[in-house]
Image 1: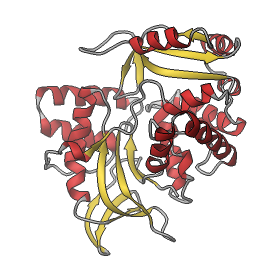
Image 2: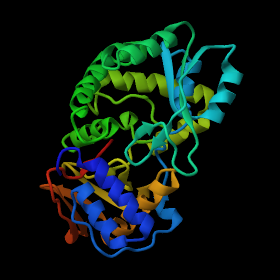
Image 3: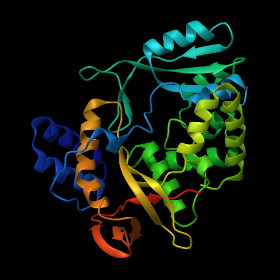
Image 4: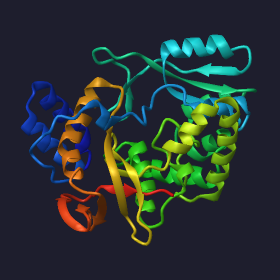
Length: 343
């Protein structure tokens, strides 16, 4: 794909979907994902969709981090303004809260913008701390947006993870993809060689870190996740149990927001191979983006339903049933999908 092509490609994809031009939308989606997608679409029922990651609102683990004083500052991002009002009213006397300006979120590109699309609600962010650390972080991010490692220090992140994210940030500024997408892709790519620790899985609203670990087996990140889980078990035991059962599911990831979540597990001794029983597509709460994700699901899930094993081979997604190949999604372009594998 040509540099900086993705934003215009997604704009064309939205336009085609809005016009009901399914054939053009499939072609554009194939180009965006770098994969030769099928041309036939099967309608997908609601039970084939899952909302694991919303990039929206207060995450349970972050609330537990704040209550247990696990870090100097907790930054709550993409919070609907009305929910932010309620949070400030409830916790304003207990913490120093610094609220950001209103903005709107494009959930296809994962970028913020000032003008809304139809039906969108305004978002904001909140820095919460027990002293002036939140105000210092707000000033730092406003005056020195490139100071990633210093911001990570104020947020209480492991230095190795902040340094890794700073490197991704430096690259992504000159890249066509969103920063979160680059960070997720690199992390999942690493699990294809050595499966990651499930508590470091970032692709869920129940994640235990609120940052991207430098590697999927980072000991410092794992220790942070253990502390968060212990705090969550105290403040919200039901959500802690959900986190334990949810995190670590295998994920077939193209680019945000298009990925598949499996009920399955890695096959021992076979890198980038899983056995699975069921597959569902991830969808966002945003209806316009969810429509595109369901189109993606209607192309991919019927192929996955033929098999019980998935392997990555030279950038191709190979589906097998009882050892025999029953389908293949061929890579086209310079970026292949990745299979996130956790244990």
